[in-house]
Length: 257
Image (cartoon, rainbow, N blue to C red; front, side):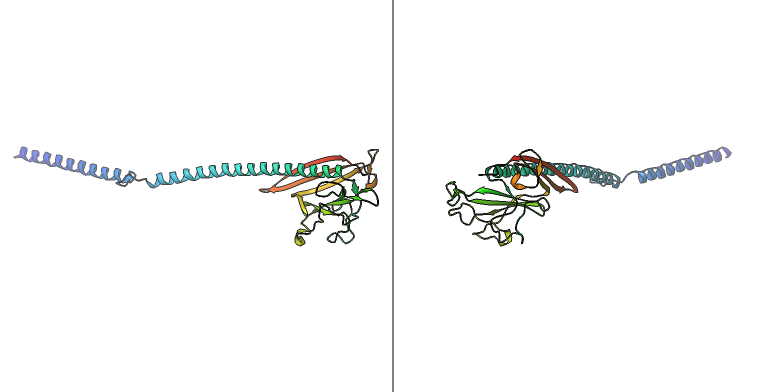
């Protein structure tokens, strides 16, 4: 009887031990499953993976934007520099041809300009004005001669700075019959009979000239000038940084015709 009882006790002990082991295994399995990342049955992303993906995409986007912005800024600055270089060279080349072709620099305009300053135009560096005289020609490019002098009539060109732009005003000699040029006007009052002044260049920061006599000494007397040196500086702001370009040229004047 005692043996049977001991046997039953041993079996009960084994059963309790097995039950505890089984329960422990179940709880361990539940805990491990709870700690594992939850995935949908359709193979989606976890929240951690999604956050990492979004962060990576943001970093890549910022990098691409920085590269594109740098390219845009660099390209714009290069184009601006090329534009200013070309503009200054065209301007100086135009002035060179007209100054060499003409009868030199004049101190004041001799042809009345109804749209000019009250006291007329005066060559000077304060407001930057240069007045030049060129022979009047007809549509066939023949000189229009003043019979009283035997010399061609003279038209006048006035180069003047207004704001950050340089303009050229034409003053056609009123007595030159068949004159191929017309007197020009400010754009605000321009008409078919008085075309608008020609804008030669924009973004002009400074422009000055120096006159030299036959001894290569500087002079303020336009009648004694045998050459003129023109200096200009163009400047344009691009993305908060100004680009400047300097250019200069010296021209020999005819001064008589």
